[in-house]
Image (cartoon, rainbow, N blue to C red):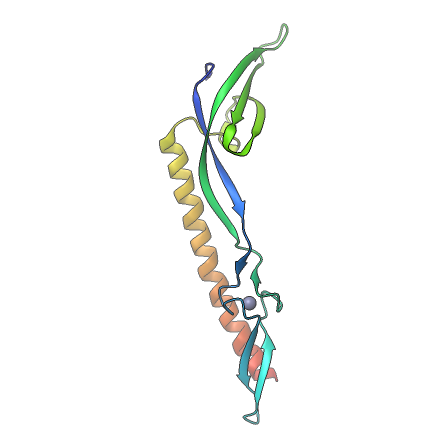
Length: 144
Ligand SMILES: [Zn+2]
């Protein structure tokens, strides 16, 4: 498979943001009742009292790029594509091999499909994280 100069390509860009921890809502602490009914506060166990979501703070989006040049290696069959993504000023040189989807996508449809898969995966991880947090909170409440 080869791309021509000016062909459009796509990439999924992962934007990392500081997002409030979803379980403590960024407050970093939880009020709990101790064994003798006294009011206490515990650090949110997952964000360790930082109040920010550490593990699942990425937002995916599709960015568009284009083939800025195609180079053939001297005497070899290697064809290098110089691809530019103006939006985030990224330039990559790649050989379009079977594993190209690790780096770029050629159609908008396949990009959207991968984006949906990543979002679904992220949603599932978030659900698991919340379940885990609930268990941690319950355990911590019983220990104190
Ligand atoms: Zn938290």
